Image 1: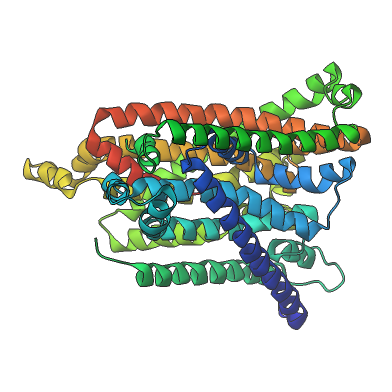
Image 2: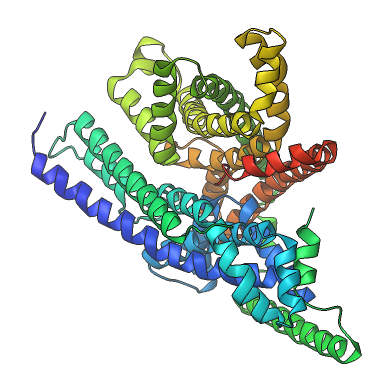
Length: 218
Length: 297
């Protein structure tokens, strides 16, 4: 049962680290993309709104795996090649960005209209009322949903195994299919499950912490 | 309700000067966006992306008949069975979450917490692998491989989305003012009656949009059948791409486009339902928004 236990832990640890860094790196991209989309969504410039809308619709209705496939297998056919981890980060980031954008937008919409009206009526400009009044409040409203997006991203990061990035799930596959070292099937399953639970609980703890620090009374 | 207004109240109704400025920015940003698209299209065209033969090959009548249509049907089959399974599990676990008995609540909460933390692709692949390891379905039940693939894809979809639907159901219950149930008890209904006659009908209406939104996600997630080589759309697109090396990108784009059409149609349906729901009462519209917060990718 504990044959090659060290070797198994070593493999899973490698996958764990990959999953964590892929998740956070692509989340950084997603936040950037999402913030840009949200600003475009509420801007007075019509083409920007249309572009943001088209982007969001596209990524909301196409499976992430299809996005990754098009990037990794398809784009090299038109002369755009990158290493698989680059596509992993870009695919996860651009895809999640659409959801972050929607979340931020619903956060902006959740702020009572009077706030924006008050900001406008004391003479703040579009940028000022958005940046000083609406967004700081909207951000607090979306911490929890952004946290669930981060947890969803951890789970989605498992899909990059299809383009050959060795994250946790891929690592578990490798360990289970390893005929030479004959790892115990159940130990690997327990190992990978516990790893994902640890990540998910750590993130929800973190989100609660941030939420508490940012909390304010209306 | 405030959706349109929020974005317009942020800037004044523009005067003639401002309108001119806004128009100019609009035109400039439009030109920039079109320019970016144009550059992308130009580069793709230079690489032969738009060559007719590259599109015609994977869209040959024979391939449409033998591969695309069956794979669409297989995708829809997994979607329908997965949705039914997820709804069943969701209702059972969701009721467990709001049960009167602490033990039931505990079990249901553990189920939800556990499966919400697991990647769906892991669930599908692991259950398929464990079964393959012990050969239960192949040796004991004598199933074919196609049957096994469908079963474990549907099982994974149902177990995972069941946990999320249960959470939506629970928040649907919680979004309902407690006075509703109390009023039920006050007129002498039993717990089961209160649940069946008062809580469930109202909660259902509140959470329908969130449930449908989750089903759109479930539809997209059928693509994960790829890891156990279930012959769904993406897998077929990939195989066609392998057959016609020159059309690899085109085949994948076609597959993605079909997903887009299916998911978009489904999410339009969600929008229609949402609008009809929010027309009913103001309070239910608010509850709908509360429930929606639970449903994320």
